Image 1 (cartoon, rainbow, N blue to C red):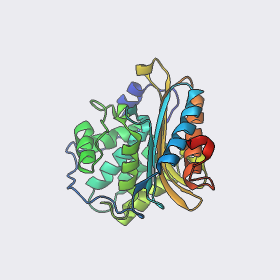
Image 2 (cartoon, helix red, strand yellow; image 1 turned 135 degrees about the vertical axis):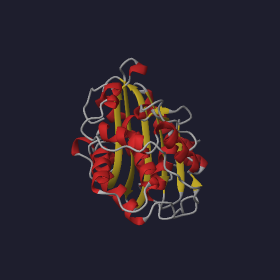
Image 3 (cartoon, one colour; image 1 turned 90 degrees about the vertical axis):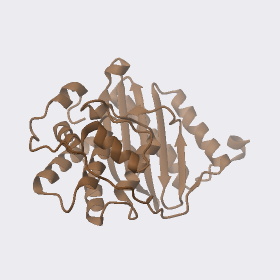
Image 4 (cartoon, rainbow, N blue to C red; image 1 turned 30 degrees about the vertical axis):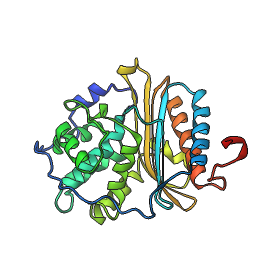
Length: 292
């Protein structure tokens, strides 16, 4: 979130700073085709998948809390997911979902005020601007409707206006990234470029996370000491990466870290291990010692 340590409820109730006219009606989004993939989609070979599963599990055995991830390699068409069956609170990663819904509901270019709202929400993780945009897309009902029409089935926006308590799986957030950036998706080129521009220019203090995998990155992070977990930290990172000639869409979600810094370290190492597995010289991950 924009100011470390603020409680979610206080941050979401505050609407000053990005106040302006609000529209309660949710945007109308008609069903659209699935995004066109760069390569034929596939999954990791069984041996490679098991080896990466073990590598990530070994790392997490020494870490507090819980974490999961999903990644889509657009260059090879490979998808991979790890421990994602139980959803996670998104915190400010939900702002990426709000951005998608808002852009889909617009006709034509954004005006200056809308650009200010969306820019501050993504680049500075401004909660007040996110609150207003959440209202503009119709709140919980509006965002849920948009996501379901797009096939994002395992994301549940927060009750009332508490967008930060939205719960989701990593693979759903990878889908949101696909819709934001895919040439075969519903957004026009200028909106796709705008979304990537915002996510490529977040404030330097918020540029941690999946960026640790290296290469060029466009991302949105979320962090929150959660009352639901006794003040333990939810720390998430979602982004598009260009690593060693591979275009990766990656989401790493975590919860119950004792400090924000601990959560960041966990998220970053998971991102590095996964990106190395898919793009490095050892990307097949198959070895006699690990597979047999």
